[in-house]
Image 1 (cartoon, rainbow, N blue to C red):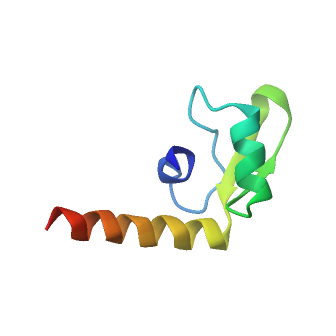
Image 2: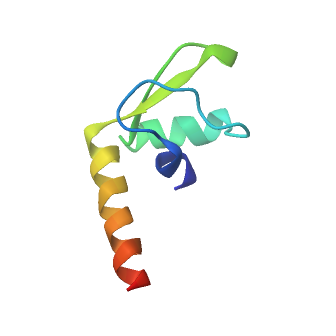
Length: 66
């Protein structure tokens, strides 16, 4: 998921441009992120599950390159 890989650590941050509310909502429903704020001031951060998922995926992609 592009949204998860765009995250910089576990800090609160603005979603990447072009990210829809539906994408954010789906990721939150699946437990990958937390959302705060409204409309244009919306921010997200990875949950523990989301962080583990991204780290696992990065290792998998790195192993694939070798």
